[in-house]
Amino acid sequence: MENDLISIIIPCFNEEEMVPLFYNKMADIMAATQIVDFELIFVNDGSVDETLDVLRQLSEADERVRYLSFSRNFGKEAAMFAGLQHATGDYVAVMDVDLQDPPELLPVMYKTLKSEQWDCVGTKRVNRNGEPRIRSFFAASFYKVINRISDNYIVDGARDYRLMSRQMVDAILEMTEYNRFSKGIFTWVGFDTKYIEYRNVERPAGKTSWSFWGLFKYSLDGIVAFSDVPLAIASWVGFASFIVAIILAIFFAVRTLIFGNATEGWTSLMVMILGMGGLQLLSLGIVGKYLGQTFLETKKRPIYILKETDKDKK
Image 1 (cartoon, helix red, strand yellow):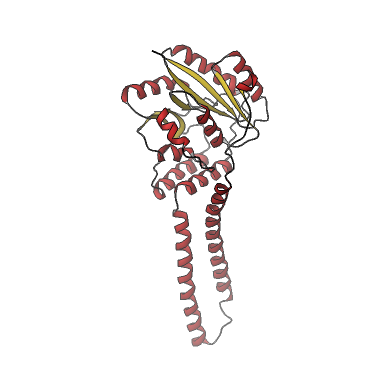
Image 2 (tube, one colour; image 1 turned 135 degrees about the vertical axis):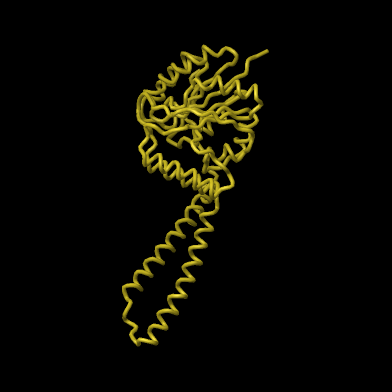
């Protein structure tokens, strides 16, 4: 009887320092886990350092190492989708190369899937030690907001790091949307998922490519992808502004008739005009965000473009 094959997808962007460290750690895990076979699929997301050269060397030295290299930077979501498309394993894992996703959890995740009949074993952090407090605050706030306005519940602290059955992976691949938010997609497709908790681990080398602004935009994409409540809010703001405008119009008209001085209150009038204008622009911005996402979807552009793979060098 052949061993199960686990495909591990590892997105990489300017990670020349981390790739060897990750591989060495995974080599120890693979050597200690004889009941399954592994393939490591590194996805080079348009790196401008020596990441691709390192991947080429690893692929030549170890046949279990595969790599996909994009023509430019398409983002982590595209890298994960590419890895899922090219994974051949009975089970598929998604991991970060920075070793903040503990590789030693993989054997536990695999045994849990096999013995307890889950479709997916995910991970979630129980703390955010080492992160800036402002980043931790906004991350926690994001989960509260999206779970309140969306029917798609996302576990607070959940990571992309998870081990999935082939059936679940195939379901995810059916979702070919251009604007991807995998944390939402993982839960939207359903399937029974168990979460393993672990404490935050700091990366041993290199720097994260995620800036605060990048994470903020990513969170907005997630909200837009899985909730239409912001559109309803824009409608409510517009209706409330209309009611306030009518009330103020009546108030100023009556005040003018009683006091006979229509020039007073210019300051308050300008404040109201600017306030209403700001609300209208905010509402237009919300609608524009949804319209922009729809525009990108209708173009039917590819999620990523491959420039090179390990098969090109063999």
